[in-house]
Amino acid sequence: MTAVTLRADCPRCGTDRITFDLAGFNEIERGNPAWIRRFEVFSVCRHCKQGTTFVLRLGSYEFRDIVADEKYWRGSSHLNDAFEIRGYVSTKDRVTNEPPEHVPNDIAKIYREGAVCASVECYNASATMFRLCVDLVTKPLLPEQGETSVDQPNGHQRRNLKPRIEWLLEQGKLPRELSELLDNLREDGNDGAHEGTLGAADVDDIADFTNLLLQRLYTDPARLKLATERRGQRRAVALNDQAAAKPAAKP
Picture 1: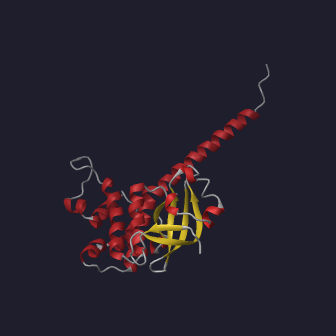
Picture 2: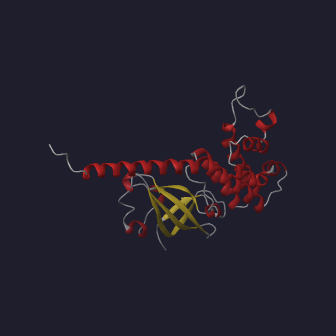
Picture 3: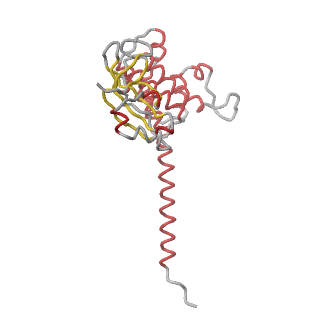
């Protein structure tokens, strides 16, 4: 049996600070700087004899060369000396629904939380997170209260998500194609919070609306900006090449 051990709380039997025996390992990532390395280690609990795959992060610069040697993983080592435990692999890692590109970090974090909840079949919590994304990104689209030069939503439209989106669509502040998915939003988030009635199909509908909204607000404008910048750079290079190829004027 390997002498490499890890001490951690067991996710399988609940025993606190129990010793695990290493049964296998795999490096999954190198950070920046490169000495920061992450590993998945499959370990067996000495209490319940069940296995868990822990995620470990190298926590000390002084161990960078030691853990790179295969002997470290085959000899007599205590992983807690070199690594920080950053979690363990579970059903939440099945998440494949990532937020669209160029979404602000705070919104992307909430979106991922909604996706994780959906992956473990916590549909009511998932719907609440996706609706929170929509709520946070649509509020700034409303005009400031008291502005007299623009149409104003009423208090009900300001406070409630679906009426607010309907108003934004009417004002042309959101793409019209979103109206085709507006029924997906309904008031499901409220239903989930108060009644616990939502299922996988309901959450998929809300996620589709949220994803498309974020694409239209953040991804598409960012891609257009980047494409415009690339076009400008190509034109600048072409003009420089033309200037360099032009014969010099005769004296």
